Image (cartoon, rainbow, N blue to C red; front, side, top):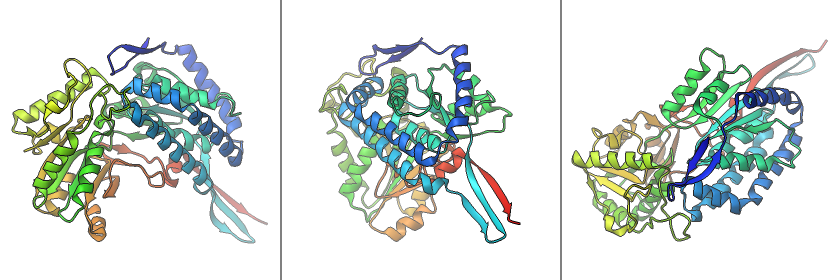
Length: 459
């Protein structure tokens, strides 16, 4: 049985049976069969049907938000933001699909009509995470379906009801049976599906170790995988920035979703000229967070996802402090007990360095380390000193500096005066252990299609 333990009080919130081998076989065969019909459906018709799917999903917002809060602990006051993100990304991809999927003309005259089409791959297996269960899955589901692929979705065991809500939204849309399916799977069954010849592409969002398991399961098969893995995203606060704006936005980048975001801010490098003011400002701002039951409307910092995650975060912080770090946050401001539960109070650590695991390994919790730097070169050196490369940001009033500085940073996305945000028109990608592939933007469609060339000579 799949058992979802809510981090609110560590009780069992949902139970589901894992699917059987027979059910897996049925799903794979049905997807392969349904693909033949779906790929022949016109793009205009697919756009209409997927628009209906998005509309159906958004109509059920109250139930979805409540389930989301209970499954992974995000404050109920913030759960609506994920639905708005889902809608923004889905609508963007629907609107841009004509441009992204149109044929590329090579030569067209009285003698030749040569072009490249973008054909669907077949069945795409999507493995979605718990921390942003709708925002991450929509990045893969919508372009895959628009391109004419079938989709089999596996959601995290922490958020199984999210897969069910997405499937529910496809009912009454006239999307053919079998085009979109979900399965509740254990690790062994997940690997079995990846290795099956009827899977044509894998899109995985999760841990680095999980990404390695996906690659291992693919083995010698000639298919690709899009892997969005970990992050340890840095920020550089330059002395010419709007300090108040930087403090408030970086605090949000650190603590939103209890820091459980691949692109959350985990390292901040501050110019020595403004270091003291920044540290004092983020301390004061962070101590105003309300850590409490996420079902309460006033709560803006909920529990982390599970007891093991809370233990890891606390131990990593404890280790850093034992090696000389200082947590500047007054814990007396947070009234809820942290004994044997998932409620982790904010931590802002100073006197840190890159010899500490806290500054090098992904924490995935409501904490951040701050280091003083003397100039941009030192900042760039520290920011690049990481096994990850998802996003990075600079806080400055100089646009030209931001552009030149961004070129020095090894990352998939570079922000100026912003962090922890996705523009659906920009490619979402990373380097190093953050993974490979692209979602979002018109480029995201290229990863769920294959090029087919037509060389027509007119005689």
